[in-house]
Image 1 (spheres, rainbow, N blue to C red):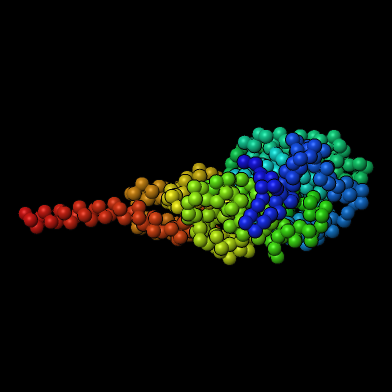
Image 2 (cartoon, helix red, strand yellow):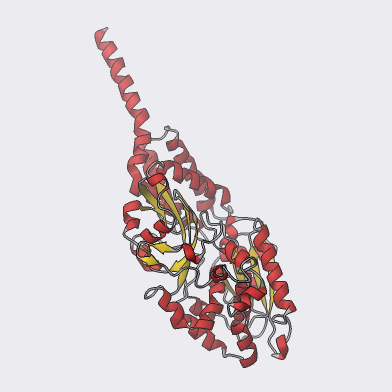
Length: 457
């Protein structure tokens, strides 16, 4: 699924700023670079590598870069939403020994398909972001951990590395600046759990992809036991544009406390699914309109606002919200990865939940008992309810199990299936009850008929 170009971004209130940061290479339509927006020449035509060249020549003080990121309001775009500048400041850059920069391009959250398009259409911006991160945090090596299924994105990113190296923009003593920085690709094997930063680090080290206990945190004890910063693809790719155009420019794209843009992946029951890079604070109704509205003119029933692990919101709730961290947090869910899955009135919420739980049961790494056992138990009970073989007690037990898993695992994988479970049941309990009452109603009718026959006899 590729991004939608700027000339298609029309809402009922007029044009909406689209593709201003990570997808800006898609705005090269009508230029000599239209056919290959991923090339180094195309990237440089937009001002690409100007920030990195300035750093190489002027030796910009690292704390000034961090201060600019803090002022921009950039927050982690992978799901957690932690302030990026603050996170970078945790790395002890002047401490002796190696430090590492790691990019999470694993993108395994169902409904999420944004980072692969950064790698496909604007890979050089990620390369520059990683080089800047290395300099700022005192690292000499950056690793991009990419999901193994992403054949085209991997090829494009590797080609971008080759072009940047050939241009003398990475390596040892870059352009006689005394700065050392290299970028490498590491291809993962498609495990959902490796999207969790410490599981990713274990995988990168050649170990089983399972999360680590925290503390210690990666900023102090990360890859190979050294200080490490892990951010998402969209986060690193935003950095060069922020430093090029200024923190205020980026912050003003969004709303207070929600600076900049966010890539929203709109899928599900919509007419025109796609990726839309829009200002944070954009009304959900605008995004739905840009995606062509609900399929076949049906009524919107529910929305997963930020990836499958988010708590579900009803259609009516979503229609009143703007897409940003604060708005969705107050509504009881979260922005997450920005993956919006629209569910129309024809869908069974029991079936939707069952399908998601099948995924989480399959993807549990098995390290924690509450997650390993709980994911299977909950998925099994919901399958039972879906078949019409459940009871009212099963519904309550499912919620109880989800509450017991929440907060009792090493990583947030437990919450990833617990939150959908009790939020789906909480907001759509009648659908679950309808499936368990049907067989009971039949049983009661059978009992009454038996008693009637006994009385007659």
